[in-house]
Length: 183
Length: 76
Image 1 (tube, rainbow over the protein chains, first blue to last red):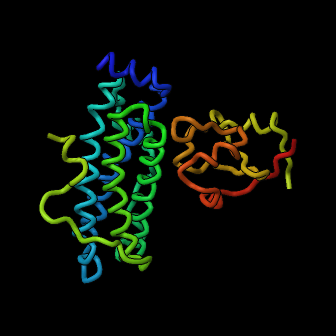
Image 2: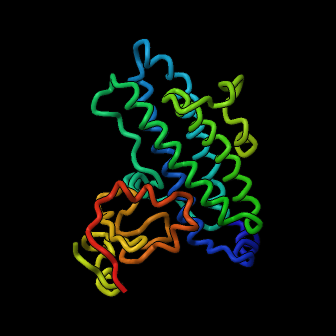
Image 3: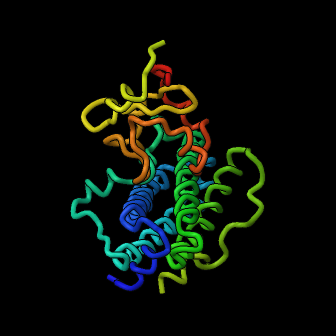
């Protein structure tokens, strides 16, 4: 635990226990999404499925990176992960991104993907709002993750016909915003 | 439609039974939501309460509540 770091955040007026709960819940959302996206990716087959497999894979890997990036901050602030994986799953900040009943329905698959990303965008916006100007490190981390979640949302949204994402797929390494926390 | 006072609404805190929340005078049953397990939402919101004010600060609008059944009206 980084005692003074926590003290600074508390003195700035942040309820650190509440923030820790949010960070654990969002870490759970990242790891469970990584798991559920693995199943979705495996089922993205055929002409339509293959079209979105690559972005689903990038989002999957980046969500795992987000989990890896959040965990150190939880422990720095004096928090911890639940001992039980089941408890961890069930405290997720986002619902399970479960495989649709008809796994050949690529549009239903995209709806699951975009809903998961939208939940994440809301969650990190919330954490950014709570920590802005008060907890600089958590803010920086959450903002970096938010940048990637927004891109994920826009990729899936584009395939649903909601308009252009405005950018290209990743070129080179994943997590352009979060990678600084993984080194 | 059933009416709830704020005191009555407090009984539906989701800890050992249904989780109801109020917003803009409507009472919603959020018991079935993954995001309202045990009557708690995103670490800081609790069922059994009128969340009209809290929703203004939330990273989503009241449209998300349309997913849940309306079970009554909140009266003062």
